[in-house]
Image (cartoon, rainbow, N blue to C red; front, side):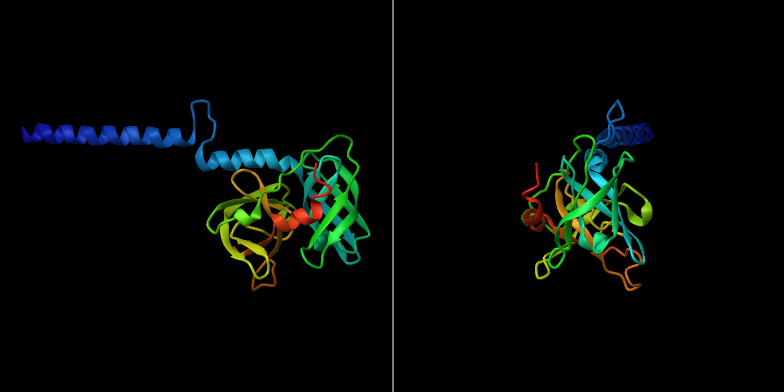
Length: 230
């Protein structure tokens, strides 16, 4: 009798484990292969927002400056970081589809927010980003960053809001931000831009990321772009 009960117990454990495995897998993928949970957020936000993210390249006296931009107006207004394009003799913007346009600076807020607006003349209406409310940002919430670090265009990284620096008006995140990401979006799980990547902190003179990055809050961005949002 004892052996019989032991055998039934083993069978029950195996059955429960099997069912649990099915439940775990089904929480990630549906029958047709769609992503669920965290993967669903990552995939859908990226696919929706990346078409509105561009590569910004600016010719400087000492070489080429490279960064990221966000399309805020379908007619060709692009938000980026001032330090990416400041004093450039020529600026070029490349969309996620590989279309290249000459750009010019139409407005800059370099002294306070390190933000600049560029203008291009697209052949057709462009996809745009959507700005969120950065006053609602909380430490610990999930964030996604899209940028062009080291020339690897359209790179997605994820992390959390690590800290809010109220004194300097910056959002700190551990999502990987590297050279070339400046001007790119920091997004919440709904795909809203809650900040614009600006800088990183690193003892090696900011040559690489160690998980301390800073972004200009979206509500600061709105002051510059409100007249251009369509």
